[in-house]
Length: 386
Ligand SMILES: [Zn+2]
Image 1 (cartoon, rainbow, N blue to C red):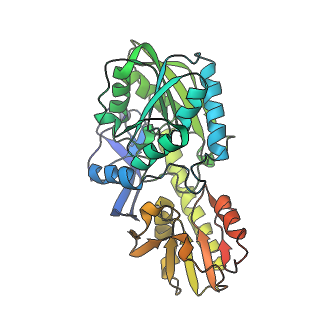
Image 2 (image 1 turned 60 degrees about the horizontal axis):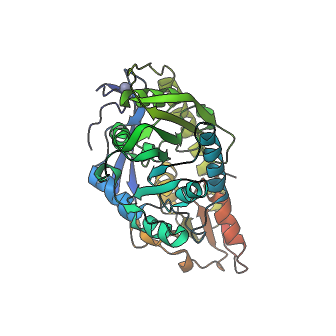
Image 3 (image 1 turned 135 degrees about the vertical axis):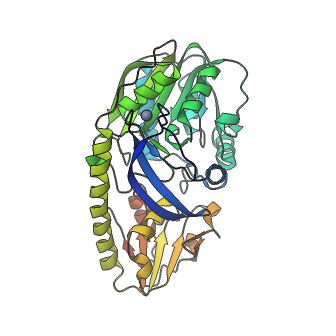
């Protein structure tokens, strides 16, 4: 565990709002601690789990590559790109060179390329880089942006969509991006938004998100890096994302790094933590009812959501043996709470005494529909959110 100063203002004092240990696939026990900066109101994990472990996770286990759809983007992903390109088109015409940090399987850059940009990007996952090549014929860079050796300032646009919340030092990443930008070049950022805590889903605070941005803390961070925010931060609660998102962009320029305190962050986070406790009690109740008759239980999903599920519910106290399955081969053979994760093909769907608990907020319906399409299915399915 590593002490972490404020991600925006470097202040050392913060107020803890959440602190809980979880078992994580391939990593063992890791504590999730969320704090709010006493000086500027930024929200972030502190202390941080070991950085080597974090890098190992992203290199070997990251799975932001549209699994289970043969590499095809989900409807949500397609809609996100429609939204992002429409937003950017209000400010700039597609010309010149765009670079994406955390480019995953290349779908975003493929869309930007179709819109007229010359594209380049980097991602730590070799699987993602291979998919970008095979799906979209994009030759992208494998690695971490912090280590990327870029030739001078050459880009007109740098894209950071749903990545800034994953970095240990988002400020250092933005400064690196600035160095890669031409003078007057633009940075486009989309992240989950810390607005309206009523709309945050169960376990909004997660090991994978090291920082949490409100519109104000994002503006503060941009200014602290010397990025001139252009236009207000646009938030969106209506999209199909599991949480509200916010988009903003700024320009490389000279700006005074004046920080305005986010006064609402602390009370919002505290209210959310209390509400989340009550929601886990509801989920536990659904599991109790759905697995009451089961002689075997399978949990579908071997990721962070399942780590939270096993920590927050009484599932592990059930008399029936528990199997964990995941469609991602990277997880097979690794264990979570001493249960080895196996392939979904090992499930005996004909077994009427098997209850399959779908452990995913985002993909719950998709997994359910896939299971129900199997004519041999006699196992029961337990959904937690619908
Ligand atoms: Zn701060």
